Amino acid sequence: MTAPCHKIMSANNDSPESRPVYIVSDGTGITAEALARSVLSQFDVEFRKIRLPFIDNAEKAREARERIDADNKGEKRPIVFSTLVKPELAAILRQANALHLDLIQTFAEPLSKELGMLSTHEIGRSHQSPQSSGYKNRIDAINFTIEHDDGQSHRNLAAADVILIGVSRSGKTPTSLYLALQQGIKVANYPLIPEDFERNALPSALLPFKGKLFGLSISPERLSEIRNERLPNSYYASLENCRHEVAQAEAMMRREEIPWLSSTTKSIEEISTAILHEIGLDQRE
Amino acid sequence: MTAPCHKIMSANNDSPESRPVYIVSDGTGITAEALARSVLSQFDVEFRKIRLPFIDNAEKAREARERIDADNKGEKRPIVFSTLVKPELAAILRQANALHLDLIQTFAEPLSKELGMLSTHEIGRSHQSPQSSGYKNRIDAINFTIEHDDGQSHRNLAAADVILIGVSRSGKTPTSLYLALQQGIKVANYPLIPEDFERNALPSALLPFKGKLFGLSISPERLSEIRNERLPNSYYASLENCRHEVAQAEAMMRREEIPWLSSTTKSIEEISTAILHEIGLDQRE
Image (cartoon, rainbow over all chains, first blue to last red; front, top):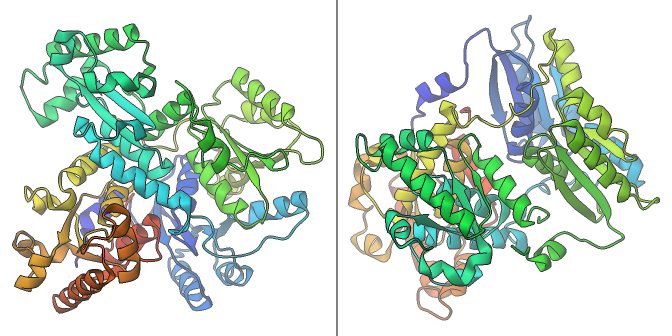
C-alpha cells in the first residue's frame, strides 16, 4: 500500500528547517501527542512531528534512539516527548542527543512522594482494556449512536443519555459520535426540520424524553456556508432560509426550555465538554 | 435535566477515602485528563476525578481554588493537574493547598530555553480551530465515514484513504469512526459476508481499490461472545459459524495479500495507531 505522501508533506511542515519533534511511547502515543501539541502551540515555530508508537522493548528503544540521532542536524536538535513507563527503556532513549521531555517520569516522581508508594512501571495501563466494562460501554454507545443518527430510529430512545436536536448541519452528528466514542455516552440526534416549525412543535417521538434534550444552534451565516458546500445555490443553503430556520429553532428551544448552545465558533471537543458540563455527566470515567 | 447519578458514582470511585484529583484547564481539559489517567494508572490507588474546564479568567480561577480547598480532608490533600497558559491564572490556582502538577509550564520552560524564545501564553491554541483546514478535514472525514459505514455506499470510494474489511462485528465501525474523528482520515468499511466466501472473491465494488484495503480479524471465541450479545443463540453467533467465517476471511486476506491485524485484545486506539503506522499515514497532523 502506498502512503499518500502529499498529505504527509503538506500537513506536517516537513521543510528541512522545521524542528523535529519525536513522540515516543510504549503504547499508542496518542496522549503524548495531544500534550505535545498543547505545549508546542505556545511557540511560534514550525515543528515536524514524528510519532513512534509501541516502543515496548530494548531493541525498539535502540532503534528509536538511532532514528532520532540520525535526524539531528546539529543546530536544531530534536525534541523528544516520551511516555515510556519502563525505566530501562527510558534510559536507552535518553542517550539520544535531544531535548528530552518525559511525560510520565516528570509527574510520577512527585506523585510517588505524595502518595507514599512506588509506581508500578506497568506498560499498557493508560487506555481502557477491551475487556473492561468502561470499554464495553463505549462500544455499546457507538452502536447506539450510529443507529440513532439523524433521527433514523425511534427504537429504544429511553436508553439514550442525551438527545441532541438542531437544524440540519448544526454539528449534531460529529458531536454525537465524539461523545459516544470518547465518553461512552449514548447519544441520539434529531434534526429540526421545516415541518416541525410549521407545526410549531417538537418531533412527537421526542416528547416523552424532553428531559434528555439538548440543542445545538449555529449562526445563519456559518450555516449557509456549510450547506452551500453540500448543495451549492440551493434554497436550503440560502442565507434567507438559514436565518429563518435558525430563528425558528432557537425560538422553539427557548419556549420549550431546552438547554442549548451555539456551535459556531466551537470545536467538537469544546461543544462536547460544554454539554457534559451542563448535564452533569462530566464526572464520568 | 437530571444527571444519571448512579453512573457518576459507580464509574468514579466516589468513596470518601479516595483521593480527589482535579483537572483544571482553560480549555476542555481533555488532554490534561488523558495524561492524568496515564500517570495515575501507574499507582494502585483509588482516585476521584473532577474536571474543571474553561477556567479562563481570574474569577473562575478563584472559584476553582476555593472548590479544591473545600475538598481538602487534611490527610489526603487533592492532586491538581492543570493546563492554564496564563501565568496570572496559574498563580491563583497554585494558592490551593494541593500537589500541583502543571502540564504546560513544566515543559514550556525547558522548551523556551531550547528554542530561545518566550511562549505566547495564548489560550485556546491546543485544539484545532473550527475555521482551520485540519478541522474541516475531520468533519468531511466523519461525513464520508458515516456514509460509507458497513458497505452502505459505493459512491466515491476513490476518495477513501482506507477501506477496512472484515467479518461482521470484527471492530470495523468503531475503528473507522475513531480514524475519521481523531485523524481526519476518510474510511469506508465493508463486511466480508458468507456470499463472498462462497464466491471465494472480494466484494466486486472493492476490486478497483485493492491498494486501499486493510483487514481486521478477531478470534472466533471473542467474535462468538460479541455476536451472542446481539443475537443470542443464533447460528450467526455460534462458535462453529464464527470459526468458519474467520478462517475464510483470513484465508482470503492472505491470498489477496491484504495487510490485516487481529482486533481481539486491542483497543480502538491501538488498532487505529497500528493501521496508521502500517499504511504510513501516522505522520499526519
